[in-house]
Length: 479
Image (cartoon, rainbow, N blue to C red; front, side, top):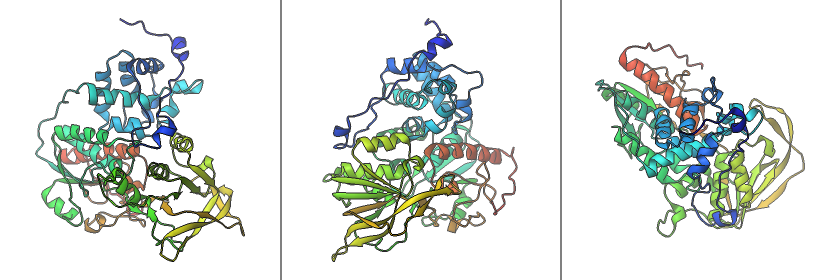
């Protein structure tokens, strides 16, 4: 039996970095950038964990994972048990280990991080999850006896997958409805292959289907059937249809050819495999001078995608400074390494085009930062007379998404706010008993892990409702 390390010995172990593809190589392929760890590296990193009696990393994890528990198992070399602990709380651990902002959540409150670098919890989550998916198979968890209750889950994204997986383990009959031809939601159509391989998403989905979740694709709730019609067949409904409608700047020239929303551009490239031309012939522009407007993870995904589609110049135009960018630091650094140019403190005011209707430039105004606004970030203020033009032949607008009204329009009694998002309490309960909602369709565009956290809370609320052990509080439409 391996001797347990002292606190001093654990603190003396430096944090292990994740190996990556060389930037010069990876911009020419769509393979995953981060290469993963071997067993020895994972075990040594896991030994850095101090196994706190009051682990704040767990408190700060929306998926409620027993982080010290799974990390300890990795340190002991029991990788399969580590994966079992992960999957007991999360239906998507291999996904979360790749795309979740651990630096702002579990790793942010890691005690080791007070004097040294935090334990690489996300990297360890990826390692253990991949081990179970590719090297050994997790035993099927115990399923509660059938309750006789049926639940419809609308949207096979992170929130919906979580609700479906949790409720089926509790004995409920669950059907997961997806509007597109493949399940996965933003995990499949939004996040590029080089950051989250499609195989990982499909394997995670296979796990919940093996538990008994029924999957129906090409089913547009609001068109194929209404929410009201689902409630005639099911005892409860979860609405996790996301916020996939694109947002635009509403400036002159936005209808020129070559101007894409990030939603359309990434869906064409990811779900519809435009990046695999000529094997797939989904049309998508492949500009030589590409500008992406925005500073979030979606903007980083789009600009890095354009490089892999043979752009000579790929540029981010962002109206604040690097410090205010909402994208993960890792994604910004990856983009910088790959040659993306960043123009900070600039705001597009119109698109320029040629006689054939194709975009040729973006006219921008320089900005300076004022006092913080409601987001907590310093507000950009235009500098008069500072206009200049960025030459382009393609633009991707990545300034956020909004709610698609199709589902809400057929959900009688389920109130929405002024922006079209469902109104729900902290446990996902809407203004209509038996209907929960969660993820981006409640909060607006957010992270995968926050959608998973919302799904977990909603699953508990629906289980209490279906078992008769929980009341349905009055949810105010003013929330």
